[in-house]
Structure formats: C-alpha cells, structure tokens
Amino acid sequence: MTAVAEQTGAWLAEFTAQKPAEPWLQELRNAAFQRFAELGFPTTKNEEWRFTNVAPIARTTFRVSAAGFAARFRGAEKIEAGGKCFDAARLAAEPNAFVALNAAFTDRPCVLRVPRGAVVEEPIEITYEIAAAGDRPAAVHPRILIVVEANAQCAIVERYSGEGRYLTNAVTEIVAGEGAVVDHYRVQQESREAYHISTLRATLGRSANFSSHSIALGGALVRNDANATLSEGSDATLNGLYIVNGKQHIDNHTEIDHAKPHGTSHEVYKGILDGQATAVFNGRIIVRKDAQKTDSKQTNKNLVLSDEAVIDTKPELQILADDVRCTHGATIGQLDEEALFYLQSRGIGKGEARSLLTYAFAQDILDRIKVPALKDQLEKALTEKLHEHGK
Image (cartoon, rainbow, N blue to C red; front, side, top):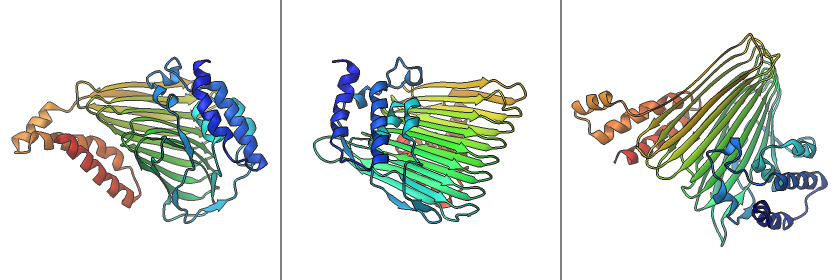
C-alpha cells in the first residue's frame, strides 16, 4: 500500500460512514473526496509546503465531527445552500488538498447574504469552539460563503478556540459586489495541542474595498492561506499578526491577484517568535498582463526573541504588466538593545522592558482593527501572553 493510500484510507472510512446527503451536496462531496484522494496530503517536496510538514496530521486517525458554531448574523440573511452556491465541477481544478477534504465532509455549508446597499452596523460574528472528546481526536470542517452585494458594507469576525487535540480545517469564501466595503477579522486562539488549517478566498467586484486581519495566537501546527482576487479599481488589504513560542509552528501563505487595472493592495504581516518556535511567511503578488496602473505594497516584519526560533520568509512579485508600482520587503530582527538599556535605566525590569518593546512591535497591527470591542479583547490577550513571556 502506498503512503498516500495509507493516509487517505482512514478518511475514506469516515467518508463512507457519512449519512447520504441530498443530490447536489452528495455530488459535491463525491467530487471533493475524489480530488482529495488524487492529491493526497502535501509533503515538503511541494514548494508551497516546503517548510511545513503536515505528517502529524496525515498520520493521525481523526473522528469527523460536525462543525458546530455560535453565530450572530445581525444584518445578514442566512440563505439555503444549494448547487448554485457550490460548484462540484470546479473541484476538478482544486490545487489544495485540505480545501478538497473540507468539501468532502461539509454537512450544510453556511451561506450568508448582505443585501444590496445595506450598511450593517454591528459585526457579523461567527464563533467556533471545539472540544476534543472520545477515543480519537476530532476533525471539524467548517465552511462558510458570505456574499456581500453591491454597495453594501459590513464587518465579519471569525473566532476559533478549543481544548485538547483536534483538527480544524476551515474554508471561508467572501464575494464582494461592486462598490462593497468588507472588513474581515480572523482570530485564532486554538489549543496548544490543536492543528489548524484555514483557507480564505475573497473575490472582489469593481471598486470594492476589502480588508482582512488575521490574528494567530494558538495551535501546535497552523497553516493559513489568504487569497484575494481584485477587479478594476478594487482595494485589498491583508494584515496579520502571529505570536508563537515553545515548539509551535505557523505558516502564513498569502496571494493577492491583480486581475484588472487600477487595483490597489496593501499587506503588512508581523511575527513574534520565542522558544523553539518556527514560522513561515510566503506572500505572493500577481499582476496580470492587463492590470495596468496597479499599486501594491507588501511588508513582512519578524521579531525573534530567542536563539532557537526560526523564521522563513519569502515575498514574491509576479508582474506581467509594465505600468505598475509594486514594492515588497521582509525583515528579521531582535529587540533593540539600546531601547532595552534605556527602559532599564529608568527603573523598569528587564522582563517588563522586553514585554513593552514587544507589545509596541505588535501594536501597529492592533491599531488597524476597527471593531472597538474586538480590539480591546485582543489588546488584553496580547498583554497577558507577553507578560507570560517576560517572566
């Protein structure tokens, strides 16, 4: 038996044990599992997964559980999922095995619609809390599609947390219509034993404005893929903050695809690493042949607090147009010794001084959060986490 067959065999047993679904959904599931079986789990021979070894996930026998969640959809309409929302034929071209696996085990995909011209005052909140139970680790595959129609405005907050050892394999798709404004926030505070795989795909209409903020604090092995495809005059912002210590591993892959002219994108990802933690940042900006007048900027900054922590960063530009303005850069550094000395000379202990400087490094990302309650909660969580590091 091949390694791929061994890894997919347990998933096949879980797949066949599912209750049959209505025809459109069963067609989706069948196509998705076939694609997953063809791809198998990615290995480090795959360039996209070169620095992230998912063998711990591939070798674990999970018990598939329903992706239960708490939600508050004020201002958004929850609509019936159907074949028009999820195209089974599209899965034949799916390059991501985890996305295919998610579709194979999707129960009833959640579909939300924000009506044309609506201005939603309160955030659309979606909270997943997973608890490991039983003789095998649980695997949940939440999937949500959010359609924000033309000229509508909304904020979306996704939260992930849990206890014990389990796998979260989440897919979020956002479609923003012409002139829509969407602020998306993703907060991951999983168990330190958990595996977390997520895929965000945003498709922007003409002159749409989309921003996504990824805050990652937990998990043993974490991979986040965030992709945005821009139309003419679209504006996209991808921001991220990841804080890891111990033996945690996190991998952030982003892709901003300028498919049409006059698009603008901004990206800032910051990482803080301590202990024996490892992190990956791979940010790709694509400018298509016809996407003239594109303006794009990408930055990745990393603060390494120990000699054993490792970060691999790879910003990429693929430019096929000639009238563009694109920049990218990455930095890896340690705390400023002069700043540490200055704070200590003012009577601040070394541990507290390190925490203050580290907090200041992260504050830039938190200041970009426009939901006051969420910002306050994250500032408190960050203070507590850095206080523990400083001890």
